[in-house]
Image (cartoon, rainbow, N blue to C red; front, side):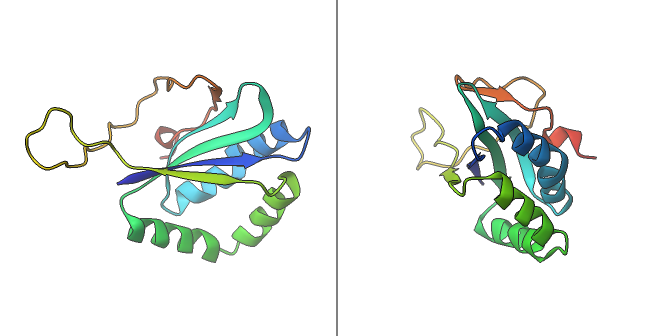
Length: 136
């Protein structure tokens, strides 16, 4: 299992519009097509940045989900709107769970905690309203 922290950068002054579109359109489409979106955030001190965290079981799961999203007939219109709202400077960081501490055995990956409604502890982000728990 791994996570991706993806940051989208809106054109100057369009951060609120981008955040609304991500919350109302982009993330629900991705969730509908099988993506696990752990959370979405705006960044304190950078009103034009939008951060969302995606979880995948493995590389094959990521490929399957992204293929489903990009193959959906709605994707082209959604991508065009995102392109109009963004400055084209997105970034993605991939994270894996850390090995279990204090283990004499070879490192293994810990399973992720189940999603909760607790606010994540991030020093420079404000949680958005939609999480994977909000998806039926």
